[in-house]
Length: 339
Ligand code: SF4
Image (cartoon, rainbow, N blue to C red; front, side, top):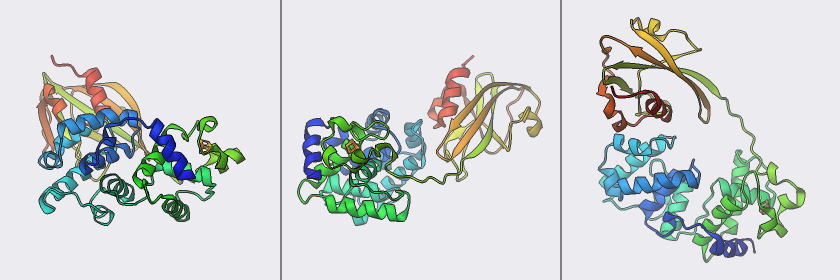
């Protein structure tokens, strides 16, 4: 009854999205990775641009990591892009460019976890695997009254077993699409549309008035505050950038030379033992999942650009060719002009 109701609702109400017209694993893979941390309306333009730039697995495999990161710029969680690039190269080189066609092989690939492997196996290869994303957790918790913390092992197992047991023998691919779409459009996190819902009669959360308290998530997240001082050295039309090489946020992206401090500071040039006219042009508070970045942008007029092995002197007009974090991109758009 549950699956039948959702499938019938889906057939009348689904959004026509580009990754729904195909069972091409490359397209499904790209869309699922983009949508992992991103809403459909935000992710759609990125998906279209990405597929236009890298229309096939081969084109992605033959590109450089920098080109991929550049295309990903602004989407965040850049490890997704780095892993995709790595995996595309791996499939191209070691698997003759052919995507594995079953869950057990897909899950071995870098950056492909249970959710993505299930999605590709189901949508591309018709394998009966339950696809479980945040929407599915929410819908199942509410309808079937799962009162365990869904971040706990027990909660995850209960949802997984339930999802597997609900998977219909026929139309399992459509059902997987249906439950995710239903969670995105009807059983939404903050304002579920219970009045128009097709499973309202059997819904535990509706009956108990617990829609907004399910799924139960007990978060133990420590948020760390970091202080980033970006030094913008500009001489005529040249600036200095450096690549982030550490295993840290924004790995392999470029930025202005950075001094990270434990608190806000007044004069980053003193720390660098450099002379020049310095002015703080912008402060930005940037929220990431487990970090708060307090970024200060210091513009420095200087007689000669500083030398360091990791520093790249580039024409300002070339900055757009380098993948940079969103806050750096925003700063450059607002403050850096070519003389
Ligand atoms: S009745 Fe409300 S809470 Fe229950 S599944 Fe429908 S939309 Fe979600």
